[in-house]
Length: 116
Image 1 (tube, rainbow, N blue to C red):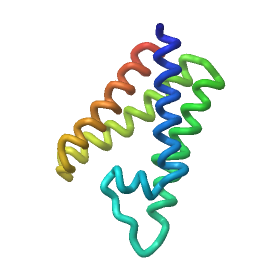
Image 2: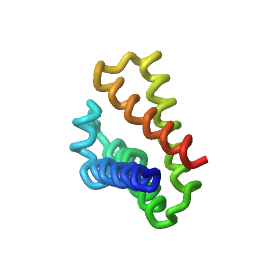
Image 3: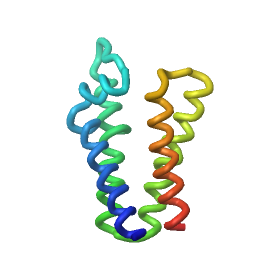
């Protein structure tokens, strides 16, 4: 059961990361981000919301080791921490921000608790 849920978490990370990696303009729209006079925002989406999740998720599947899945959990923990701070300081639109935080928190908790 743990192996199946770990693999699902990695595959979802790859799938969601693929949007940021391959379709940053679409991702920007979903995240309510605006593109400006430069393409640096698209570059950042491809890197941080895209490539990082694609590669970490793929590494989990390739290595198939609990510590690899725990590292994915730490990635989600960092994303969730940033989202929590944003909820306090930035007051992003609800319920979208709460749903994203819930997703990050659940993935972080699962991946860290069962793999460490």
